Length: 220
Image 1 (cartoon, one colour):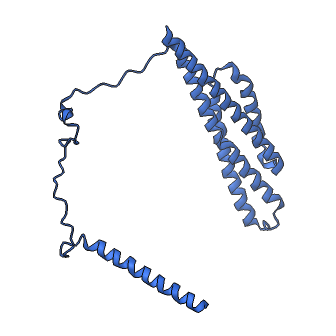
Image 2 (cartoon, helix red, strand yellow):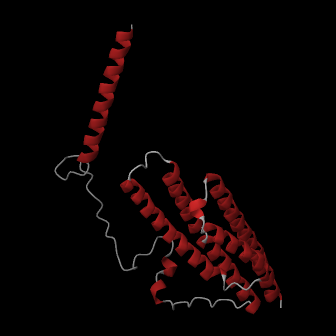
């Protein structure tokens, strides 16, 4: 019984493969100029240069002769909107810049813990390689800190004062990344994430302030 079923399946598969090959061959013959089934090609001339106008749009055949419309000038909503938009852009840049610091700190912490606890790191060469990688990650951390400060310090928003102090504290803590174990590194990264969430909330508030100010400006 099972042999019979297997035989039927094999025959069906063979027929399916043959049908696919026949279909493919028939398709290819349509494009063979030497084959009787050649489709003959499409002799319609395709005009270039914009001279061809779609059917139903003949009234716009002279579209190339129409004068170019200059882009609309940006609307000036006043200095307050400009200030809020610049401030929101600064917050956005700060949030993005902060993403590099946690990654570097995590790598420093992991590398340092590996030096201290991994029994496989038992040769001078192995320790030297890990130490070199830690130094590279510390360089990335230092660059991330410099980038954060360059974006954060020019921000003159009263709501930013407390956040600046928190960020500076986290930066100071990041300098001790070699001493962070897994738990301390997680707690530190969680604090960074909370700051980023606070920045996002501030950006959302600023967006609403911008919308409100625009409405006031257009209502005048």
